[in-house]
Amino acid sequence: MRAIRICFVLLLFVAGLAPAFADGPDGVLGTWVTADGKARVEITRQGDIYNGSIVWLKEPLYPADDKTSPGQPKVDRKNPDKSLQTRPIIGLPLVQGFKYAGDNVWSGGSIYDPDNGKLYSCKMTLMMDGSLRVRGYVGISLFGRTEIWTRPAPGTAQQQ
Image 1 (cartoon, one colour):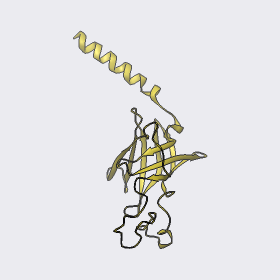
Image 2 (cartoon, rainbow, N blue to C red; image 1 turned 60 degrees about the vertical axis):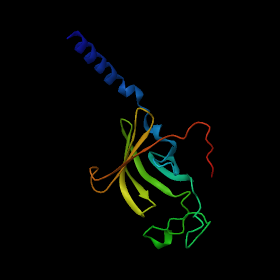
Image 3 (cartoon, one colour; image 1 turned 30 degrees about the vertical axis):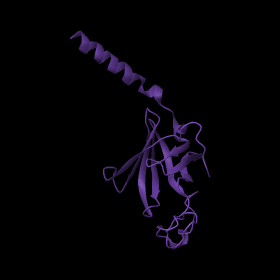
Image 4 (cartoon, rainbow, N blue to C red; image 1 turned 30 degrees about the horizontal axis):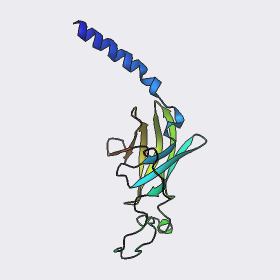
């Protein structure tokens, strides 16, 4: 019984410390490596709005066997807006329009998927381990996909 009481007290103590781990509104700022490691996204703030653009790609050029642009920088080919299909992927706005909602959550924004040219509602949560949980969805958050982004390892060059 005493062990249960000690565990309960420790649980309350740890739960009470959770807000101490909060990073606040600007905790999301900086460079993030996407879940697949193929891109880096830099999140910035303009006023109270947080946006992020692709600043690095693991493979920035189309492969030699690409039928239309071998060896050329990748562009937003899948965008449904024909006028945007030639914009470079590096520099592409990926996450846009987020506001800090408190408790290390940014909401009200959207995320663009250049692989299919679609825009999704999105919510981002800074986790206690320092990773960023990025949830893109259609309609309600229940119908979507979550990725975990991480910070680049210290000392890794950001090749642009």
